[in-house]
Amino acid sequence: ARNTYSQIGNQRGLASSAKGLGDVYYICNKYSESEEQYILARDIYSQLGFQLGSAQSAYGLGGVYCIQKEYSKAERSYIHALDIYSQLGDQHGLANSAHGLGDLYYLCDEYSKSEASYIYAHDIYSQIRDQLGSANSIQGLGHLRSAQREYAKAVAAYLEAQQIYRRIGDMRSLANNLWYLGKLHLKQHRYGEARLLVLEAAALYEELGLEQDVEECDEFLDGITLSTQEWLSQYEVLDIIGNGMFGVIKKVKNKRTGEISARKDLNFEKMTEKDRKQIVAEV
Image 1 (spheres, helix red, strand yellow):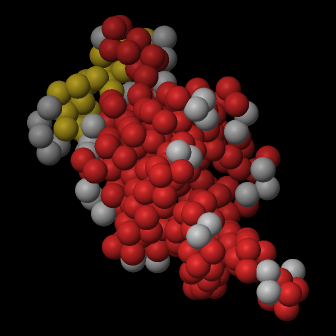
Image 2 (tube, helix red, strand yellow):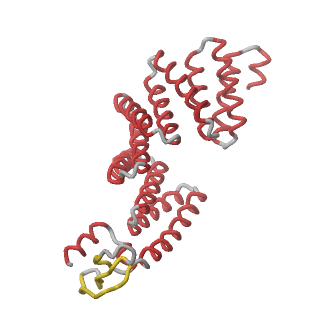
Image 3 (cartoon, rainbow, N blue to C red):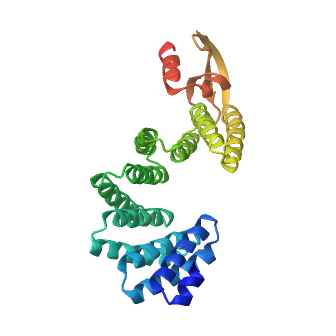
């Protein structure tokens, strides 16, 4: 199609084909080729004065530059797209560009800018009733809170996004969400919950035929076992407190801090938070 458009001098068609190739190369992880096509499309659209096409190409370039870690170029591209979408009154394009900036600023550790961009995107998505976009922006805030070690807020954001993914039936996004939650729980040494979440994510990835993602989940689960064993090795058993509904409860001391607490063996770390609270209540 591109050769035909070129032969007949159809610049609009040529730009559209270049934009399409940019999208294809991006999906195939061929970022240099994608960049080349997006630039070609952007330049032609600009010459023709077709603003929507220019904005779409600039937005595509923003994504490419983010992956290539050319963050200054990515910021310029996203802002350029955002400005055009704003002029056109294209709310969906505006929200997408704001979300792209949120991702970019997150990668650059500019958390206040990232938060503002995600919230702006979320507000627009909510107004236009784009549930997927809204969920993605909320999940972006979850990543941000996790990076800031505000784990309770991160969990709340991930769970809010998860409800939307389940409601709209987006299984790929749901699997990713479970994966992120699993990694977040691992940061907090909540090994049992992390394991259950990643197992659910792995099952979804397998249903979707995403073998590489399944392998990553398997590696993560192997790591949880090692992390749990290492974590439990920090404790010295002082006494057996009793035999609760979940098994033997031990009084232990943290070898590093001297803190005394009640713990179960490895099985304790596989339990849900609700079950752990029951154990504490028994103690």
